Length: 318
Image 1 (cartoon, helix red, strand yellow):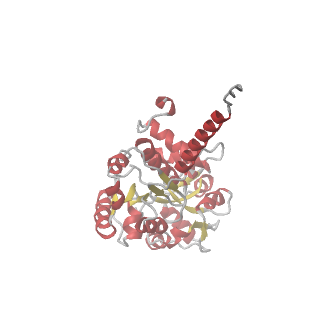
Image 2 (image 1 turned 120 degrees about the vertical axis):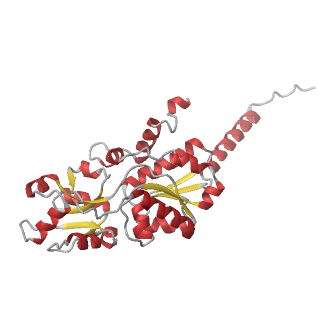
């Protein structure tokens, strides 16, 4: 009778290999699982920070998988994406909703503006405005600080007097393409302040416009009041002394179908209501836009949520 063969280690290795492959496959499938929620953003830094803030808050407090799509383009790209179902939510501004999307006249009262867009968007578009984040990112005009101080330009009216009186230097202007076309942008400003630049303002991508001003290629640009690049490039904002620009309070704009499918999102995203003032938003933007050691929008958003106690830090989770 021959001696029985000892079992080899090969079957065990095969079992271990199969287990490893199954684990890897499950992770691979999870990685490419379709997103439950898609959050978008327009093509500037603040929108990417808010996009990350909403997405991270959802991911850390639910089992939903979130797809982030910042820097999609201007207002109508995001709004049409929301209406068409490509997006579930994005951060919109009350003044933009009232003037640009609804085509209404601007209102000076922020509460009235919010009430109008809430009621109309719900009725006409089946969309919900959640609680505003707290800051008013109104449009403004911006110049290099040293030049504005040298010319004594502090307000929009000061600027209008300088460019219409023929004083030297003749100032050049550059605005975003959207601002040039908006009724509450350059066209409206020309009526309110009688601006008459010697050369027509040039259209710029937002990412290039601030640097062009800092590099003296332009003298006057449009800007958002909470934009971190104002501080990053040592620019100064001019005072809208006739209060032409309407209030632009940012808030999550979300599909009602999404809220019906995931009702927990309403209370969750409303936790961001009123937690970001103008100065805080500018500082968050500045951390991403600063020239020395800029940070990722995702990291800035996560850090803010931790500071507000809205999510736990990694150490706390451990």
